[in-house]
Structures are given as structure tokens and as C-alpha cells.
Length: 184
Image (cartoon, rainbow, N blue to C red):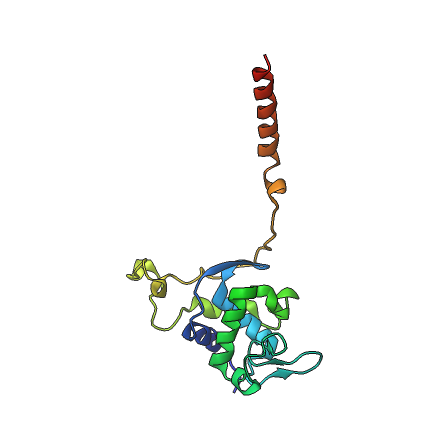
């Protein structure tokens, strides 16, 4: 049995993945939708997928056994265990642990736009929006990511220098004035 994007998202929720927004190469996106696309790109949704060419990666999120030898092949072919190990890897290594993220193939092979659409349908048993009576204090009732409408912005990190040159110049000028006043 292969998993589709909605099933991958449900699986991620069931094993405790946080339903949060994260910065990614596709902008600020829901982590659940992003990881479902990464899983689809890595394994085509096949929990029995195994890549032994140059590595030994197993299961939906292609957990590399050489890097994570604590789980057996059979264990990693269990969808829930694979998703749980993927969460541990995400918590320690981040999104760059997956080749489908770093090479951007999650966008095409992982059909990221369809994953956003599936995410927008909401998790089973959750309230779609606060306006419909959702409880703002509970993540289970937070409104889903707004409907996807057009191309995603590209997230680009900005150094402190790039974003704050004006503030630095004002600060340097201020220090120069202060030194001049104190030297009188």
C-alpha cells in the first residue's frame, strides 16, 4: 500500500509531529504539509521503499541506517516508526537531513502544491477556523494554513549586516559624536 499526501499528513499528526509553520526554501509553510511532500518525494509513499545505492535508506522518509543504526530495516518499514524516527531526526538535524528538501524535489516529485491543498482541508476532527467556534488556545483547533493562491515566495536568509546597514551607520555616527563631545 502506498500513502497519498493526506494519509502522510494524518500519519505525521498521529505520531506527534507539531502542526506549526516553519521557514523553508518555499517560504513560511506548514511543517506537516512540507514533511508529507518530502516523504512522497523520498519514497513515492511506499513504506517498504529501500535505497541501497551508496547508502541504506529505508521507509517513507528514507531513514539512512548508516547514520541511524538504532532501528532495523523491518522497523523502519513500519510507517509509524519511520515517521517517529523522522521526527527525532528533524528535531536534531532539521529539514536539511532530507535530500528531497535540499535539492528541492519535494516541490515536484513530492507535489508540494497538492500537499498544501490537502493540508487546507484540515486535520480530521479539528475546527477549520476560529470564526466557526474554534478554541484559539488549542493547537488542535487552530485554523489551517490559508488557501494556496499562486507561487510560493522564496525564503532567503538575510544577514544582520544586509538588513541593518542603516542602523549600523547611525550607531557609528552616534559614537563619533559622543566621543567628540566627551573630548571637549
